[in-house]
Length: 405
Image (cartoon, rainbow, N blue to C red; front, side, top):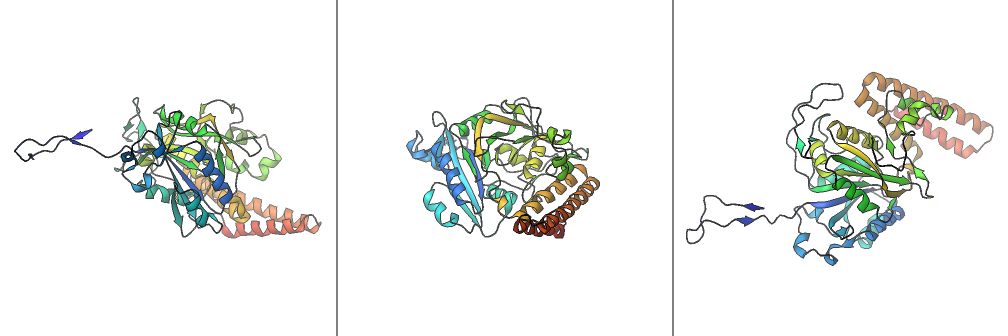
């Protein structure tokens, strides 16, 4: 690409020659990992990435290729069958108190590290990383952004509609993408050989795909549900509640988990679990990052809904397999997990289905925790695992105090 200088002449009055634009292309893939007190898992995750990539100086690239527009997006590794794609990894640590701050820089010097003084959560951490990379993480108003036309280019959003059905206004200009693709990855994941390229090539080759996710498996190799339909009005009352325990094969939960769809087939879905979610950079540049009202949980559901509303596809790719030791970071504090999970359910319901349904869901969930306190207290009186029952009662009382607003 050349830029011509106008109205200027050379030393002898000659017209200036075209100047080469020396700005390097965006990094192909940036992996963003948010970590909190899980050094052993983070080390395994980064090692799996390391094993599927090579340092950029050992590839075919010359040193000029390492000069990126933003220092935090300087590609340092390559991956792919012919090492054709550039890679950077950004780890934001959420004020860990384990060995992460001291060991991460020395063990993985090629990783771009950001250390937060406080726990920003999954949403805040990812948005902070996006901001450091030059993105504007503030979400656009629902329905704004761009949609892919037949050529894959972004078109204006004047025909898109907001969740309440009103016509969306034209979006304000936003910065261009600083990376072609962003891969949001949990620290308690490990990429199986070939999975990084399988996922990247799956979205890189189809311009209408806005987000793509792999098949997740537990550490024992069992399939982990990672693709979903958007939750309907009744989903929140059944999913992960006592109603689901009483009626495990209820149609709302089965539909939500896509139980009627094969798990080994590539398919378009509503949304994908955020433990491993690869998003097109121009989509994030147009729509913004995660909604900050979701500290943790439901944030990827909301993002995928905004992506789908903007006209992009969300695709499940079973050819890419990622091991996920589910819930290592979030599962460390029981009461905290219950509060964040259920509060996000209520907030998602309010955002996409209105305040009336959100109020009904909130009251139902609080009633459930009151019943759980009665049940756990009765079991403690019978002498059954009293320490465990006391801990659960304390956690459920914390949920009631929080109110799930």
